[in-house]
Length: 411
Ligand code: LLP
Image (cartoon, rainbow, N blue to C red):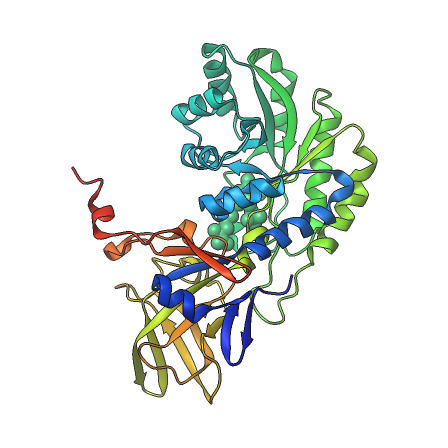
């Protein structure tokens, strides 16, 4: 996917719209997404895995904007949800409940009841206690629920320690032996069907090697649990964030998995749970420079977005490319920081940027995934606005919050 964000006449555009026009129309900080890029990413992932004919369940946690959920539903996506709140959002977006996979390590009784009442397609269960609770709640509701057991395959991918989930001591999933023991006493869970195995070993997984290792664990499990007809491969497909990032393109990521699993496609259905891959490069965060500080040979731009708008740099040392809305001129090494009263509140460090002044604008690129969805109101900043570009047109898809929104839940 070539980025929807590109320079034309020294101006940064999203598809056929200059970003300066969006900043004028909606203000900053502003998240901007390209509908074409989201669609393109979905179609490219679907094509890479086409021989497995997977149900693609978009991981809502990456970006839960209703407009994006609707757009992905139109492309044919189901959804991976991890909370009652995400269940509610997918329903507002018109999702078919049968296309929902309810994952997550800490589902509450209330959330399980809501999901049972909504008749979600799948429950990806992560512990023996959750299984027993779900069985009791389903029985009480007179329902029978379809379950996939999430395995902890004991595989640790080479990714940031905060976003890897497959190691044996991670809180996620069931070790193989425990999953087998549960399958062997499935008679204890008469309100549940054991129909699936689920793996998800982390996010931004560099290539398919660790996923293949996890697949072998899942296939060992499936071989001993004959009622299983579905394998959920999770998400984690990587996205380059900086020049020179060397991650497997999705076709290369998919190829060995397709080769290994294709012979089983007659007997198994497949689920994928991509989040980042579908939306990361489709989105940017626009910010306006408030102040320029040159101290001891170092330039710092203070902008109106910060860790409250885009948490990834502060939380993971994540890298987002910085692109001024107007390019050109000499560059100077520059840090970009937000307004929050925390030393961690930097969006970027030591970037070659032109001489920007207060009022100038810049974009943080590859911000479509885990950007808005992880934003907070820290320091009482209202949540930012979001806009969607469709070709040469644009529209607001979530309004900027007001101070009244900030006070709405106070009693
Ligand atoms: N399935 C499960 C069970 C997950 O836990 C996740 C992500 C996904 C699918 C989607 O993974 P993806 O395709 O987006 O890699 N906030 C972090 C990423 C956390 C991912 C959490 N789980 C970040 O900003 O990098």
